[in-house]
Image (cartoon, rainbow, N blue to C red; front, side):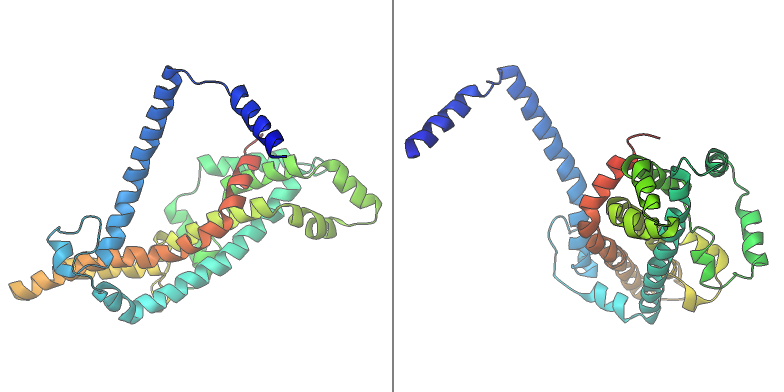
Amino acid sequence: MLGIQARKSNQVKSNRVKESIGDRIFLGGIYLFLLLLLVIILFPLIYIVSSSFSSALAVSSGRVFLFPVEFSLRGYEVALSNPQIVTGYANSLFYTFFGTIISVTLTIAIAYPLSRRTFYGRNILMAFLVFTMLFNGGLIPTYLVVKTLGMLDTRWALLIPAAMGVWQIIIARTFFQSSIPDELAEAAELDGCGDLRFLWSVVLPLSKPIIAVLILMYAIFQWNSYFDALIYLKSTELYPLQLVLRGILILNTTASGSMDAQTMLERQQMADLLKYSLIVVSSLPVLIIYPFVQRYFTKGILIGAVKG
């Protein structure tokens, strides 16, 4: 047995195509280029994390490079002890969770019918949807609509107006067209399966990749969104995390007043430290979620972009 395995191994090695010197140089250049890209991408991330664990003096004086200097958790203590940040964190989790559920549900509800050839008028409806990607009413008409519907200064103002994205509808529609054949729907109909039952029992279990893509897209959008809150919300207890962080950073950098030079210096140093600590705090949920949906995200994007 060992002799046979050795002969097979030698045959495999002998069947390999020998790379020329030019090919080796080319591959080496590609690996070097990718390594350079990796360094360019990783350095800012490592710098932000290292700065967040350093002292305020080390950060403001520019002594942090790759590793924390004068290790300190002061930035996180100040950030997490602020009740506004805790409230904003809870609000952002609320908006992200329920906003993602609403957005994914509405997107699937409109994308699946648009993918079926038996749905009459689907091309006209799709044209109207694509039209909104090119032209829209603008900020003031949108604000007036939200005001007329009584959603100003309510949580609904961050959940409903931006509930659906046309780009996400196109991706989901393409996925359903390429992955759910019409023959499957016809066979289910012959067995007495209605449209809603077919969608729930057949389509959704087969659509895990695109559902993961939609969840990730909408969740990231909701988590990072702050402009809608800036326009529609007045009550600070409804502010999402991003808007709270914006206010804290502006307050720390501009509210000097009649403070002496030493206090102003300390305040500026703390503002520099808080900037990095808040970046880590605000990015943590997305970094936790992404590894669990990454494989579905890649597969769903590829399948959803095969054809239009």
